[in-house]
Structure formats: structure tokens, C-alpha cells
Length: 187
Image (cartoon, rainbow, N blue to C red; front, side, top):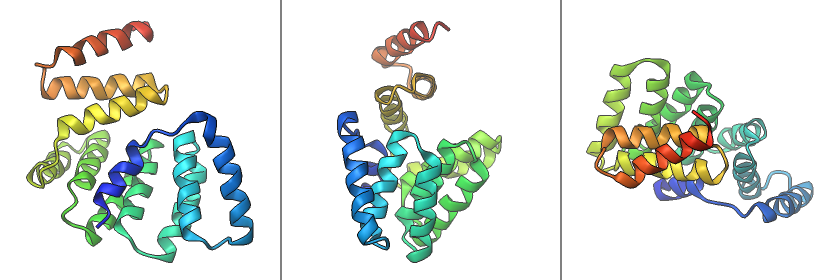
């Protein structure tokens, strides 16, 4: 399964200078081959990194209708998570796990979604599965924090750093990062 590819898709950092040109090229190529799923997926991932969740969702909904691949359902779930539509995120994460029930990262994301809906029991259950499947939840939160920080989403970065620090308060660099972000956000 493309577990590593899915994780990479989320944490990839794109050069902002290249995004516009790459998007133009992909859209041009799709004009002559509108059903090219690889190009659609590349464009959807690029739109996600631009923060155009609606555009990325539309493309991924076409993609999951054409072929049932866990990674695609999971990424669509993640897009809904980013839009804070947690019920839809849960639906797509569960579909992804129906196809790939041994993907710890998807259990982690499902746990995050349940946590945001206030369903603590389901959140903990899914986090337990993620841990059982050897996912380092602390590291996942730190990776999300760094990704959000690089994207300029400082409030989201702060939230992820705080969660990581609550999991393991021994890392003084994380504490310093939290204080720095709070200062930047004037909190």
C-alpha cells in the first residue's frame, strides 16, 4: 500500500515560486487529456498545498470514483479534515481503512477527527490502533506543526506543537517554539 506515499503527500513542502507555473502546466496538460488520473492527482495535491481545499476535493472526488485506492480516500478525508468538516473526514478515513486496515497514519488522522468532534472514546481507540501499528504520534504532531509553520498557518502550527508538548514535555525546543509562536501571534 502507498502508506509512505500518502504521508509524503501531506508533508511535502512545495516551492511557492514554482506553484503557479506547475499549476498552469498541469491545467494545460489536462485540457488534452482530461481523464489523466495522475495529472489530476498532481493538480489536486498542488491545490491542497495552495490552500484551495474545495478545488482539491472536487478532483479527489473524481479520482475516488474512478478507482478505489485507500490513499486517495485518505487524502480526501484529510482535505475535509483541513476544512473542519470532520464527519466527512471520518467517512473517508473509514473507507480508506476498509481497504487498508493496517495503515497507522490513517488511524491517527481518524483519531484526530473523532477528537475534534468530541468523541474521545473513538479518538483514543483509533490512536491506540495507530500506536499498535508503530506510528509515532508525537512525531506526527511535530511534523504537522512544522508543515503548518512553513505554510504560514501559525495558529495551526501552535496547536500541533502544544499537542506534541503535552505528549512529551521533555523537549525544551518545542516549549521554546510554542512561546515564540505565541509571541508572534500576540497571545
